[in-house]
Image (cartoon, rainbow, N blue to C red; front, side, top):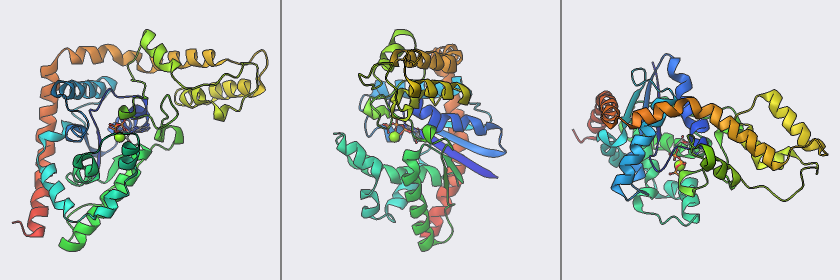
Length: 327
Ligand code: ATP
Ligand code: MG
């Protein structure tokens, strides 16, 4: 049977990029005949979150978000990364077969450093921990956003290097990214990749004035509404593409292109986006609050998932230890 695996870092509140690039795909495959492992990457988050209370809070938020949006913890193994210590054991094995040069070429690391994030060794070795996360469950398919494609290639590389030395230990995983280019890489309010760590995101459950404020930060220019515009150059249109039907979208685009009296101003686009976000995530809002009000239940769900996850990871760890001579 196919094994699907993916994770999300509790580095902040889940945003539209996390939803369209990752969570939406994770929920969409719930009916497929496959085993599914979804985890909250709290060990990864430690490379940037240093306040214990904030980390705990973020973990609960991510858990409540997935469950509120429809993750069924019976059909998917849903757990916290740090509850599966086998993953860090496998990480060590992988560090011994990965070249420094490979890690030095990681775009995500370079992007974060260029944005002024002070790197620690943990951030540098992120792709190795991620490879361990994936390989620990014999994962075949990893649904992620486009930003993770390179990390998946690195995972394949590490699996291959280990296997070349010690035999067929690890299964080779493949990335699965959303077929919609827009969903595979959702822009932030500044037009760069939306990221929790870049503070350019829109939280999926934002509402009311705060949502309006977040939307107002989406970069526009000072062109008048009547002026004809190429819709492809309007960042707000990229956001609307995530939500609107093809027909409605074509209509907005045509009116922007024509310009004149009937053309929408940026304010109109913002209002439509606010409505669309509220309509998409509004129904799950109450459920999220309910879940957050019962931390013991969240804990119970994650603990149960961890038990199931550990069984698989322990078997893979044993196989890897035996192959390389540790046992
Ligand atoms: P951080 O800034 O801490 O790295 P992030 O916003 O990049 O956080 P992650 O937790 O690293 O989010 O990624 C979780 C999942 O969301 C991954 O599958 C990733 O590919 C996907 N993802 C993150 N940002 C985007 C985006 N802008 N568009 C599409 N997918 C995204
Ligand atoms: Mg990221």
